Length: 412
Image (tube, rainbow, N blue to C red; front, side, top):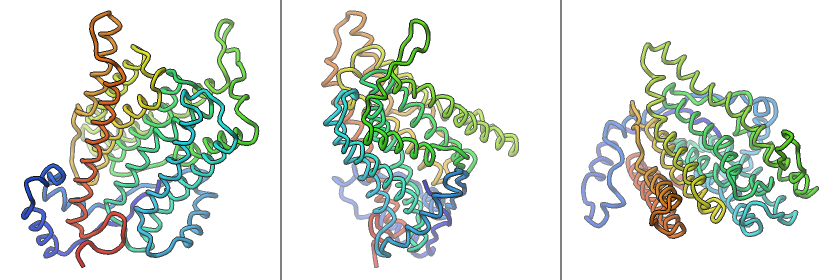
């Protein structure tokens, strides 16, 4: 994850012309896709945004940063930074789809080449995720939209890589997969994002998911490609009556790594709160409520029914889309200078509905069939996220006179 540096400035005349064009001439049928996401003051804040932060990762500092600095020189100057980000996401998405075909319940052993494909894909994702910001500065195309797009793709990859790692470790369609994705992905990503919102800077610590975490996952893929996955099924005696496969024991290694990171993120907010004499820490807890509700709803639904067992990929993606909406709002709010976060996200409601439906069925009352409900949740959540992304990108592009996937100007 590369930190955006530098603001994006426009002349006052261009700002007025773009704002005038945004305000007028829109057809009524276009309103759904162009309902304004930002006020004029928020657009001004976007133009003046200057990202702060650093990557303290040991592997990044002493090894990977040098690789990235050389690799970016291989990219053509006409290639837009957001295109680099999107290509990187496709590198993990395609192997993920292949893996879902060979391991539909997250417990089957796939052919060795599938794990090798995922190793290459995740390596390329990590590489390109660190090249997009360098390409932006190299081509003079850095913008708040690029920062937003980069973080959004990182959030989407939480489910993609989480499910693929669960399949590689053969965790199965159970709560262990959900725990892996929550501890190793969702929780650390959300708390890092909320730290950036309240402190104004994104700090990736000495051991972090964007570097050491992705390298560890690549190690899982490469090992499985060479030696197979039987090792992950080796029984480990936890207690006299509790035996777990080695793959599931990985969860107990993830928790001690992720919990200090989560604590460090909130501790940074607490330090900033004391420094500025503001109630930032309490506000951060208030802003974390939507994520807490999302967590309760996803685990509540999974543990109250067989939805995770019967439809693991569909269920995880339903949870991911709710998480994506929550974390995207925090990212956008930070970039446009909003000072507070809401205590509820309407995108959590479908998960709450699913959990309530599962509890009702468990109590013996009449309930909705789970598969149609789950399909409905995924489709509605995907459409809402897509419309929101289009609205935001369209308004920013017209205001800054830029294109999403091209270096050329929107209006020459």
